[in-house]
Length: 253
Image (cartoon, rainbow, N blue to C red; front, side, top):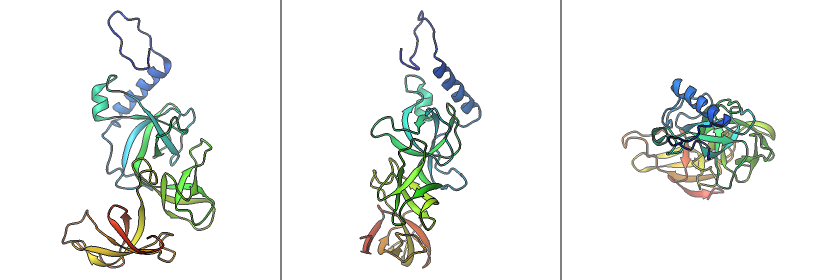
């Protein structure tokens, strides 16, 4: 019989240890008020104030540290298991290893012991220590060691918004979008306002190698989350999303 499958009157009742433990952990999380809808404004030190987070059970067999790179591999409760839980507060299973192609990447927002439930991030940005092999790398990807570590690369699931100078084990600020920064076609650019207005759009300089380096391009940015009468001043640093940024020149074009 499948895990978490419903029993009928007269069926012999048996429950596996992993099913029982998962229900206990879910019950504890619910009692602590942790089963909330995916957050859009979670305040995690070192993280974004505008992120999507979910609760997830660590099924990797090893403890997970804050900032570890993970894969969403399954859901804890299906609609058949618990319709209300599934519809309003879906929660997932995560692992340090990929279970199948297409597994969604995530980042741990807190330490999660093996078999326990904790918060993971699907979209947003977070301070994470990774191994950088080249200063020119603008992405991070799974190291392949199945331990949650990341390495720098030319492409990857996580966009590097900022990193310490040099190579080796460095602190970075990583962005993750739905399905991964690279695989979903999402690109985020470090920009600086050089003119314009919210109503007409802004001209910006683009800093593909960080604000401490020379600009690598120019563009026009539409800022959609401000009132038309609210304008940004020249020199303001902003993040430019590829959906709202038109690159007009430089190596970014």
